[in-house]
Structure formats: structure tokens, C-alpha cells
Amino acid sequence: MRGANPAEWLALLAGVVPSPAAEAWGGMGLSGILVAAVRSGVTARLAQNPATAAELAADLDLDPLPTRLLLDCLRSSGHVTVRAGRYQLSRRSRRWLDPASGLSVAEYVAGTADYWNWWAELGEVTRGRRPAGSHGAPPDDPYWERYIRGQRELARLSAAEVARKLRLPSGARQLLDIGGGHGLYSAALCRRHPGLTATVLDLPGSAAVGREIVAAAGMADRVRFRDGDATGGDLGSGDLGSGYDAVLCFNLVHHLGPDQIPALFGKAREALAPGGTLAVMDAFADPARRASAAANFLGLFVYLSSGSQVHTPAQLRGWLREAGFGAPRRVRVLRIPGLSLYVVKKQLAGQCSTCRRVRLVVPWRAGRNGRRRLRLRLRPNHGVQHLRVGHGHNA
Image (cartoon, rainbow, N blue to C red; front, side):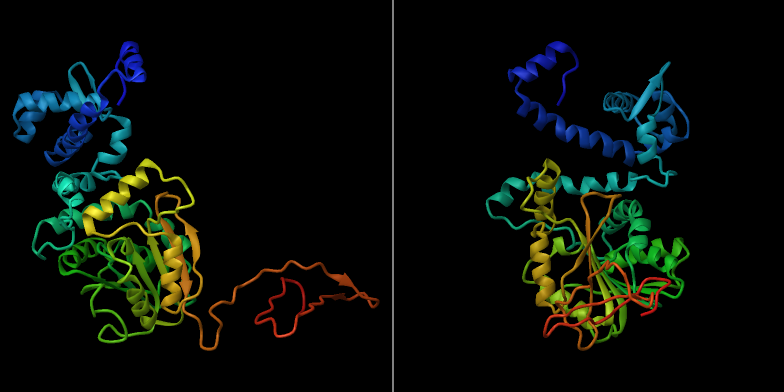
């Protein structure tokens, strides 16, 4: 909360303003204003060209008075500007709320109205009521359309970066995307790897929307969907087959409890071919760092949406180890700072799960005959599994 003039700034600093009352009253309003502006079509219409409140109300069949009041609130929050009575999206908001923008999150904003009931029930949840959850809706519930299309917009911000940074085995042909919903990450990886096809496993309501999204992107021949529950018996070497070169678990583990995740990773390992890659991307809590306000908010939101919590990197490493994997490698995702991508391979037969690849930079010494020699001294019971010599030298 910020003041509108020096007197209000000083009052806020002095603590004489009942800021909790303002936060409780205004917090709901800020969300409601933005969601209503997107759902009513106001932001999309203003993205086309400026309009007066009366013109906007006539175009969208809205009541002129609340439309003007809504526009004034959007102006106060910086989402629209006004000149000579004509409103238009601000430069900042055009980037995020114009449906024609490649960075638009308008559908995600519209879908956040589904969260209001969760927050309204928070008091009862603290008294022991089980959270309502976000994945129990029937397959034909309109919730899935709002939820998956909103998640697609967020994924669109990072899909290209993730596809570029996630190194798949050479010649990868098959990918399994567990809980992949919209299929955007699978499609991005398939575009980057010409011989790759993907199977997305998700709940029926989610998969139905994902099929539409992938078909509209022209990728239906390479990204296919399978109805199933990642926490049930629909994954592994059974009817989904085996021999996958890569398995994705993106934004999934925060919906699961500590008793479910090792089993999920174990099934993923069974589905992988030797040398295949498991990639886990999610928000993780680092107890060694002081949590930010956003991290605290996310932790509570995750509990309200699934009854689970944000897990730690140490827990992830333990669950991977329990499932038979080695230590994962962390890949930073810069486009969405709150996410971390962890990558680990299924070891080849006879390969030690605790072995690590070590890069040695060793100076060459010239011998009496002018030849350069590389000498490695090994301890007993140790050895070199692979030795790669730089370009221009003989091993």
C-alpha cells in the first residue's frame, strides 16, 4: 500500500494508518478489478484502439456507469491511461494483457477467479478442513478449459528456453510427459528434435483441452495424449510401453505428497530406456535462504490447491535416490525465476550411480624426443572410465 501525497506517506511510515484494514479491503478489489476487465473483454477491446467509457460499454453491451468506474480503477493501478476522455491499455499492460501479444497472460488472469473460494475458505482449512483441491473437477467441467489455457500462457514464457537447455539423449525418439496438460513443453522439444514424438499423460479433463491446443499448433501428429492419473497405475512398463528416451515431470511434484513422489519416480525409471533422461521442473523451497514474500504466498497457495506443499531440493535428491537414480544436475530457468529444473539420467547397465563426470585440465610436458606426454597417476581401486583428449592431440 502506498500513499497518494506526502501527508499520507508520512502517516504510513508513522504507523498511524490502519493498514490491515486497507489491505483486507483493497486486496480483494485489486484482483476483482483486473479479472473483471479481462473476462468482460475490456482489456482486449482497449488493445485494439482507444475508446470512451460510453463507447466501450456500447461495444461490449455493458452498463456505462460501472464500466467507467472500472476504467478509473484500472487507470489508478497503471493498467490503462486516459487522454481527452479516451482510455487505452498502458504500454506495460499491452505486453501482458493484449490477446494478440505473444506474452499475453490474459487467460491466466481470467482463470484466477477460480481461486477466490479457496482463499475464502482458508480460515476453515486452518481449523482442519481438507483443502478443496484443484484437480477433482469432472472432465467436462469448464474449469479445465480455464485452468489449462491459463497454464499454457505461463508455460509459453519458458518453453523455448527449457527446450534449449534440456539436453536429450542423441537421436531421442520417444518422450513421456507426465501431467503435461497443455503439451507445450513436449511440442517445443519435438520442434527442436526432428525425430522425437511425445506422449502426454494427464487427467481426462486436462488432456481434452491439451489435444485442442496441440492440434491448433499443428503438432497433433507428434504430440499425442493419454488419459490417466500420474499418481495411479497408468505409468510404467505396462500399457504405456517402455523405452522412453526422456520423461518429464513438470509442475507436478508440488501437487503430490512425500509418500507419492518416490513411487512416481520409480515408475518413471521403469519407463526410461537405459541412459534416458528424467527432467523434474518445479518450485522448490531452499531452507538455507530466507523465504521471500512470494515464496511464502506460493507455499500457502500450493497447500490450498492440492493439500501438499513446496518441497526442498534435498527432499528431491532423496526421492530420486530412493527410486534408483543418481544425483541430479540443476539447470536454471531464467525466464521464470521461481522454477528450477533438475535433470538426471538412468544409468547404463553396470554403471555406478554415484559416479560423476569430472573434467581435468592437465598441462602437457614435452619429452626428450619432443613429444608431449600426459601422465595420469591413479590410486588403487580407482580408474578412468572415459578419457577424452582435446582436439588436435592423440590419445
